[in-house]
Length: 188
Image (cartoon, rainbow, N blue to C red; front, side, top):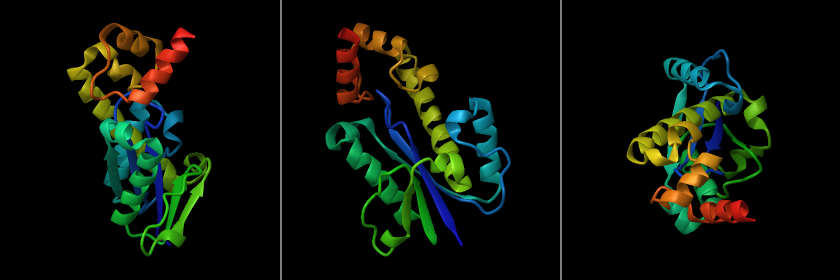
C-alpha cells in the first residue's frame, strides 16, 4: 500500500510562508522522527537521505500574503489539498486534526491523525522535508530583512523578533493578525 504522509510547518509563525510536504517512502530511512525533536543538522542529513532514497517528495508553499488575505484555516486546508491532488497514493495521512475537505476521487483516502508526526514514518519524513524547506526560505528572507533574525527564529515570535517589529515595523512577509496578537500580548 502506497501511503503519503503530510505535514506542515510554520502555522504559528509571525512571518514567512506556510510550507507543507507530502512524502511516500520507497524504503526505510534511518533517523526519522518529528522534525521538532531533531537538530537542524540532523534534519538536513535525513532530508538528503530521503531525497537519495527514491522517496516521492512534494512541497507546497502558501505565502504570508495569502495567509493575510484568506486566513490560516484556508491556507492549512488548501496546502494539503494541493499536495493530495499532486500525489498518487492509496492513503493520505495528515498530521493533526484538520481534514482538508473534498478532493476528487481521494476524499475517502484521507485520514487526519493527531500526533502522526511522532508515530508514522511517512509523516515524520514530511515533517522533516517541510521544516528543512521552510528554514531555507527564512534564511533567504533573513538576507533581505536581517533586523528580524529569521536565520535564528524562523519567523516565530521570539523576544528579539517582537522587539525588531516594535523598532522597525513590519514587512510584506509578516502575518498581520499574528503580529497584532503578539504585540497586544507584549503590551498587556
